[in-house]
Length: 398
Image (cartoon, rainbow, N blue to C red; front, side, top):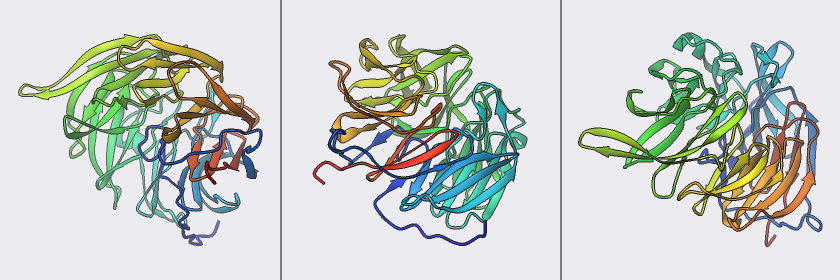
């Protein structure tokens, strides 16, 4: 497509990349009407899309995702209000594996008028968000010496200061935002499919990555390891989460799915950094499906069933609702989970610890749906490997 520039219209809609503003699946400041029998989601548009498990980044009326088209991997920009395609960047690259099929896995990241992307075979792009022009491009597999892992490179880029960081399997690499020059390499943690997570512990900003060896933290300035908590696992896909009092929640999985969740205390003393296991729970065993932390509880997937555990001790509070390998976001101000099931059905579930309560459900997509949903303003965006759909949700009080 021609490099025509499209300016984002400010609509209050902003979802800069993977799992939202805090990379934690939390939607702040939005309240919706929950009686979908009288105020159902209103479909704005629906269109076919190439395969891939990327989610969306949104700025104003522009949305960005990644998809496979034949032998080419694409970064694509669409009008979020109409679904009209605006520009597309093409790389000659194709990844396929039997479990999840073809296409890129990572979600684009928006920052300061640019979109940063990571393809399933290792291509890192910095593109002009308005027209898709290439500002720089690298190959993280070549830069780190890592082979493409069995399920493909899946890390969504993280911007920290003047660098953008991706995980080539279990090895972080940082690039200069402006030029793409490699700035540092992190320690090698084996394989993994998680994305780098920026957290602050004991007042120190750091990047945490989950990989085969466990959880590893590095300094953003130079990539030097600060601490490591060993918990070996076949698969690392989920993101670490920070509790209200500063501990970390981490997960482990194997080829069959989730193994469990662990709470660790991380501290910085005169002798350096230390980590301590507080508890390990099988009450919540997410594999590659979102969990969110809210009001002292964790809500997520235990196999294909939604579950809630207590942050304090890891005990399960409830389990219910068969959503398969779905995904979710939390409407924080409303104590509400917005779930997209593996079968493509939307559901609203109370994010409370007393019992499982489904408030509403609504059919959205057909076919296997593993992509993370996005709620930007009143616009809900969902997709899978076949199609993408935009809905308008009625806002509470609106």
